[in-house]
Image (cartoon, rainbow, N blue to C red):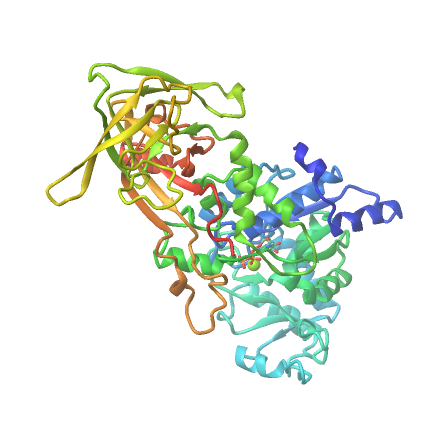
Length: 556
Ligand code: ATP
Ligand code: MG
């Protein structure tokens, strides 16, 4: 990936360079991307993926993909498969096989016994409510659990009995014995293991006790020889616990945890839990609905991996939080597609145009460039004929100032074709305009007319040489800048009712009867549109999803 070499420096890269130059970092740099398979990845995860794989690439190291799978009730194989696909689609290759925290359940169990034997962990029978009460608050220290001083042998026996299924779910937990008065709540004897009678997607029914994230993560990192464990800022307060775990067991190495700010984007949400709510309540068409900020949704909408990586580059990596404008993500995809999307003409709301001075039995083949600035992309053919379609919105009777489209007795050029002038408007019984009778100027193909000036250029398709298609006009899913921080309302109150407008009888030039599926098209004057393969197969005609408009209409 050559773009990577141009990548702006981030503070994590600088820290590692520094460590290398001081001789503190001598071996291979190893990072990991550790998603929990409890939902699909979103654009925030893309930031973490680009960071972790990017750091590994920069230092010729390795990045692992590890599923952090300690909550079997919320996780599934569907999510695992989707996450792998998304990471690959972004263009990254993980080192070796996919890993699972559950691969280390035996080791994690072993280290729990090690802590018990050292008198650093105990089995506690306080109920959840009692535990919360004993925990104290930020202002008050906690109180020691009455079970805190259980003898080692008893702890060991009870822990083994927990493992062997001799207790009910929630009856006992294993806790670290650290400090109930610590100003850091995470160190007030945190839970390490709890009982859960749940079938696990990787380990089946082997376990009825599952380790907590804060215990699992440092051990998994150490087991893999991770050197830099990059995570988001909310884990800063967990770092002392991460270090405590590794300092108190006999693991082979002690990875360094470094925190960075998570990505927040306005006009959307980046929380799997809330995205799942939209899916479960059927407010969107699944996790890969093109309006979702998921990687799979962006892919279906027409975002390219290049544009997502460019966006992650643009926003950088730092410790200061903040919210990124959705306009930046849209800018990234426009930039990418502007240089490489093939051009085509699509009429969204067809209005029939009859050229009264063009023979009914005649046609002409016109040759247009696939891309106006890139001749290497070749040429395409469209057909000129007596009956054409233009967009209803490109014609008006009462001409406003600066109208650069068609109007009665006004001339416009049809892109790549001739100049036409509207002579008569045909209406149906209800008064609706159904047809325009126009005259074309035979002397204007590729040259300006003599003695008058056309009022603009509009797009068109030929009636006989175009195909009907469906268009999904997608826009931002929410019409509120921070849909999930509205104290008075629910996230779902802010869904943009215009976020999907479906057009059922649009027409596109014939070359798109079998659309390309690797990259969106630019429909001239309309925006970028990507063929939805699944919907196309179901509809029996091309279906295009609007990736993004040509210009930002949301800017302040
Ligand atoms: P969510 O709240 O959406 O479930 P999460 O952090 O719980 O997010 P994980 O599957 O645990 O999701 O995340 C995997 C990795 O991606 C973690 O290292 C996490 O810090 C990172 N990550 C998640 N969300 C973001 C974000 N918005 N910006 C940057 N990194 C993120
Ligand atoms: Mg999580």
